[in-house]
Image (tube, rainbow, N blue to C red; front, side):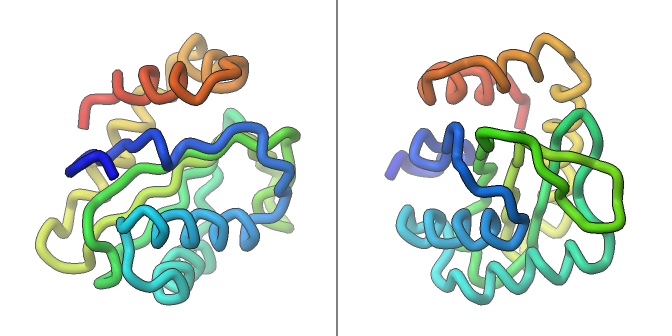
Length: 152
């Protein structure tokens, strides 16, 4: 694992065939556990889904930013997944999604850290060229370099 990296090459997933919010959040949880960012994938999954039940995290522009604060988070992170096709993030809502940023922070300590991450990611996502690159770059290394331009 790259030490103390909020954005890690191992947490960038391109052109996944998944088209279901729960499936994607479980996928993230498993990968986060494998990469030692969390110590319990089920607890993390539940924290993220609890947040999704409050207010879905699709923000427009084909983007969702699911996030969770949980004691299972060992180190703050931003993971990224691009699906092969757009899909409905939450039934009953209009937003389709293809670009997903999974954010996680410990439940205690940096109480506002997740808000900073969401704010900085959101600011960068206002740039249409940035979004286009996220959709078109075919190499995870290119996406990694692009994501590292986010000031966090």
